Length: 413
Image (cartoon, rainbow, N blue to C red):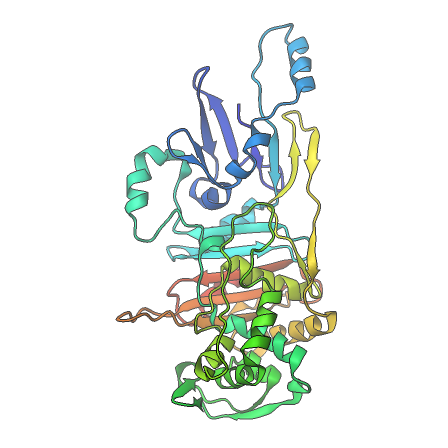
């Protein structure tokens, strides 16, 4: 029998029952809630997700355990059961994220910034892996693509959440930038292109932290031009844009930051506010905020803590692994303060939680294509508690509108 996949607290997320000597039935106790991260194993439709990554272990047995069972049962044959896989997932957090997303399309990623453990990973719309035979045709015809894991395979313009990367690049490359103030009149003319603040807002005389807290496109667009494409792209790539993110086998689409010519000022300004052709997965943006929360050290995101035999004996344990010191502790601390200001008095007040100091950044990502007037995507990235971060979160709601509202509310939940 195929081994069991467990959540971090030892709750079984899968069950296997024999149908006959040749076949067995695999049941997913959380149904659609865990389907993207666990995947499925099916004779007709194949194998995906953690089921695929840990297929060998789930079908391996301990010879000594089998001998003990044989002796205990006085020579009568006993069921062989594969090894179990204990994950980092927390069922209560997963359910909360799944419920809060409601009927929206989007994704939620929750990481432990100190270890890289994936506490929750939700993608919607989802599908029930327990009845693939009945639903396969309709799932594949569905234009909303329920089989897509939006948390790792969905690429979206990150909008103003990307101002976090731009701010870091400015702190690294522009001397005295924290004291730099400009008069934000609501727009900035760049050649033939005019960059506007969101919804016609005029922010007046603002400095670095205020511009971040209130998400000034004018301020960050001009920062992007001053930085230039090379410096901004270099900082983005430090955070693994344009690269494969190291994981424990979670397939992740590479996020994109463009190479632009020096004369493409409009596109450079747009890229600094997470538009132009910048694209990021929710896991990518969760890693950005997780790195800040962890003093500038990026931890490798992973889904499994250990493999155990059917009797609970440890076969293999997975230790947290650092990807590297991406930014200095000083810059990480500066960014933590700035992200706290977003939730304290800026665009992210909807992410506040009573009794907990939350830090974050909202994003309202334009996704206009020719002839499409759909609402912008709603983003929020953040961490909590401020003094001793235990969770880092990324939320995207497709066509969810202004990021400080829906995505921030989901994150606060």
